[in-house]
Length: 242
Image (cartoon, rainbow, N blue to C red):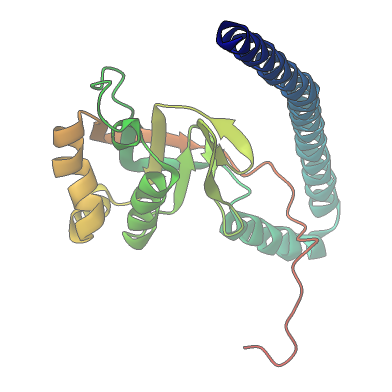
């Protein structure tokens, strides 16, 4: 009688274990089935939006070029428009819409590709705040124009993290990051050294974690004009704000 009771208990445990294992596997399959299409849809949406963005940027460049031709033609035929054209060019230059050439610095920041696997990998990659440090120091040093991987930075630009990449003007960029700045090379380098955090990144942090952080003076830097849209659609003026 006692032996039969043991056999029944073993049989019940076996059936219960089988049901739990089957339930767990079914749940895992359902979660995978639910997650995969949503992830795929999200990736496809991102790629679609990036293609639309690039197409719109191309149209903006074409239309700006066409407007410039019209203005030049009008200024040649109507002397009174010459002053207007010059003023407009000054505004475009101040807004960062025109190409800038001259002396300056090139700062290259890059990840350590051979970091120790047992350590925190975040210590061995360049983050968005690292790029902002360098960019802000260069502007503080009087840079006339700054770009990151060819993306011209203007007053509405942003540099922010997006997973394994960094968005520069909403364009995904990956390591290494080449930061170009047109301006007085001596003042730009002095500005990099005057900010303690930037100086630490380019020296101690670079050496300790094996990052790439090189600063080179160059006499022939060319930075393109900003090619994105300028309309701010979601910002609102705060009543009574300064």
